[in-house]
Length: 170
Image (cartoon, rainbow, N blue to C red; front, side):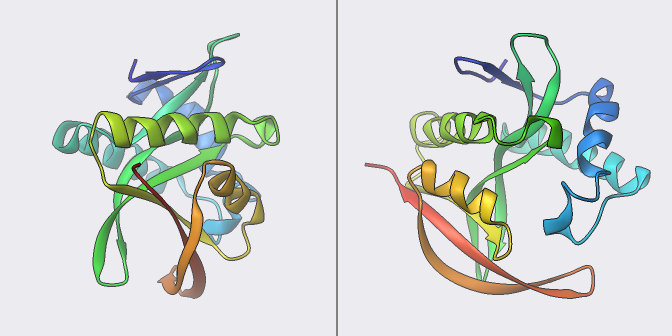
């Protein structure tokens, strides 16, 4: 276990989490900000990327486990991302659609922000969110982040405007 909140446990993902991860990454609606669902191969690469991050950085996107039933309901954690010409520490989150609008993403994201500030001693964290993803923008705002700037990323053959929401360590 990496982080525990009132309702959730965050831990490193394992190969045994692949089926739960597929339910998220292969859901067209859940993946609209990524311009579509992932294939089996892309899902496995995503899991492998997280496991590499755990080894190399000590963090990545963690499995979000619902305490009440032990189900993996999403992923939330920290990754280094490119923003314009710099590398930034990002809090990212992706959840199974069955668990949307219940406050889990906000609860997990707040815990990750606290981890970044208290454990990693990061001076700031951000969430990079596609301009059309209002629900994720609202999670960032509830996590105490403010919109700082915008940039258009090119991904899967599409120009995607994104906003960077930032919180600084007090």
